[in-house]
Length: 115
Image (cartoon, rainbow, N blue to C red; front, top):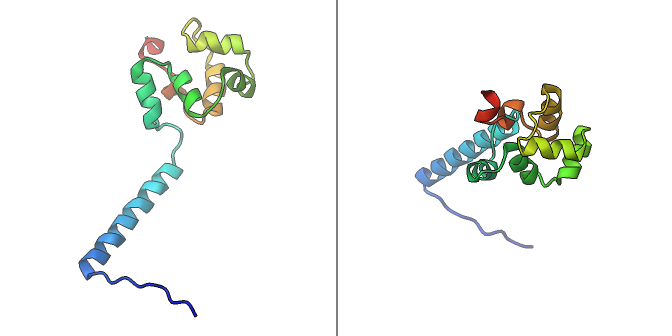
């Protein structure tokens, strides 16, 4: 027969532990309910460093330019031009890219795209 070790907590420590657990459950629920409009921290940092939002999301998702283009149904050269702001990309194309990256079109647009 094996016995498990037990732990004793004060009522205050137990309540604090329960509160922390509820906090974490709430945060997890919020992340699971994400509609794609949240920008992950590594993506935000890459954008601040100067990467285009598409490049930042693509890299964060572990996709090559060719793989993202294939999944979005566009040519790699066209995607490259959009990433480098040489072409704006149509709304339909941006929607395909956003869906493939599990985000929204809004998160992929830069200030210069909206002027």
